[in-house]
Image (cartoon, rainbow, N blue to C red):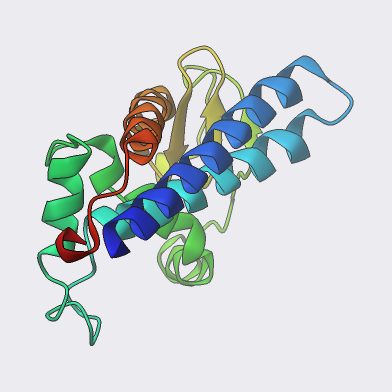
Length: 183
């Protein structure tokens, strides 16, 4: 039963992430609210993806992680999620989650204190003279990639993986429940 509860949560987080991906596309079509809609949706997608990731790859530093160390492997096996899945990488979400630390680090190391944030446009149209480390958030709608201080992440790969995972989770949940002694 616990596996089913986790898989239901994964399925719901997949739906949230896919809804956020749709929000990115809608924001790009509606130029009156592009920037806010797109960045809200990107951050929402990353939060849902991180929640999925935490179910599939429990953080080892948590008190209960040792007790449930095999949970992630069991769920990954049930849902056919590969170890190198884009969901395993939470770096981009961590950049946004720890923005305060990233800003302080930038402030202490960038003597010019020039910064660019929430850019929507191709990566090849950079701001002349501004290093990648000073460009905090950039989304390229053509490639569906997000860059954060020079680290580039392919959102489309993540969305494709989440879409596949949602189908597998839904299929798993549609199966008859096992007898109580197998739960």
